[in-house]
Image (tube, rainbow, N blue to C red; front, side, top):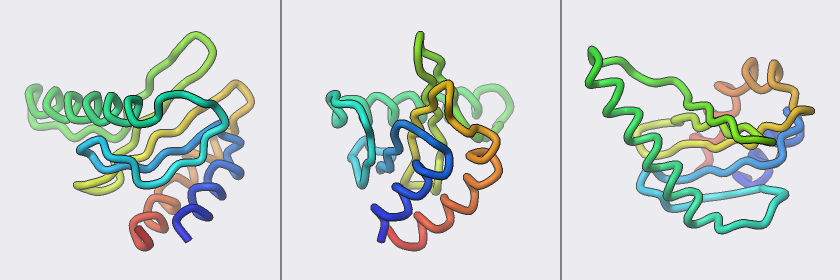
Length: 115
């Protein structure tokens, strides 16, 4: 069921990839078009997320909602789901970003309910 929800999120937003992982860097589920070292990538994203959380606390106990990393030809969005998990979304020029932003919370709830 989790794989189906991840795939549906990828399809409705026209994303090139979605990964769901624990905040300790362990992968739970993925649906990505590219081949790369997913284990290393997820661990690095977990580190970025945890660093951003500490950064937010440092400047007045502020919570983060999402991290956006713009690369030359792709954008990666890192979004916390709950205290233990997070999503990584691979955004392309053709991605339906408005759909993603409007539907993301609904999909996070669906994912958390089934994992």
